[in-house]
Amino acid sequence: MAMDSTALMDSYGRKLLAELQANARLSTAELGRRIGLSPTATAERLRQMEELGILRGYTVEIDPEALGLEVMAFIRMSCAGQNYHRLIDYVQTLEEVRECHHLTGGDDFLLKVTTTSMADLEALIEALLPYGNPITSLVLSSPVEHRRYAVTGKLITVAKKQPRRR
Image (tube, rainbow, N blue to C red):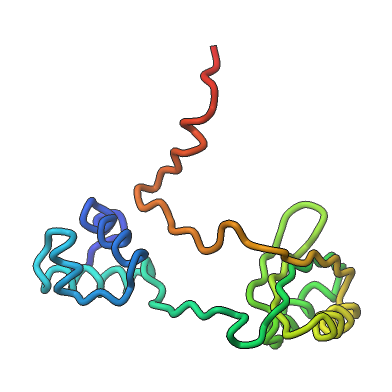
């Protein structure tokens, strides 16, 4: 009998996600020890979470500067009509595009890009011109990067700081 995602997100499942976010390279035995399940039960839980798409993968973080990717920027794109779908297809072919998000509001897309130089960024912006209006912001630094998810499902830091309404 297959479990649903609700059953997998019990206290063991949430502890498992917290441990994996801290270190995805832990062995199944070590993960089990930390969350209070046997290695077999832990392995089964991991398999089920993978099958349901709760766990999408195990990744490696690489410092972009080590690859010569010195420039990071966000490009907001506004596009109209047929350019909309053409832009979606085009950005998927660009190695410089790390992320692409479809937005509400004034802009249609937000692209996170990395390039080796300002000249390469300029070339990328020029390549995007046929698809719409790119507006670029350079990243100077990133005080918060890749924050872990709150496995409790509740974000409490802002709620605690809000004054009580009477």
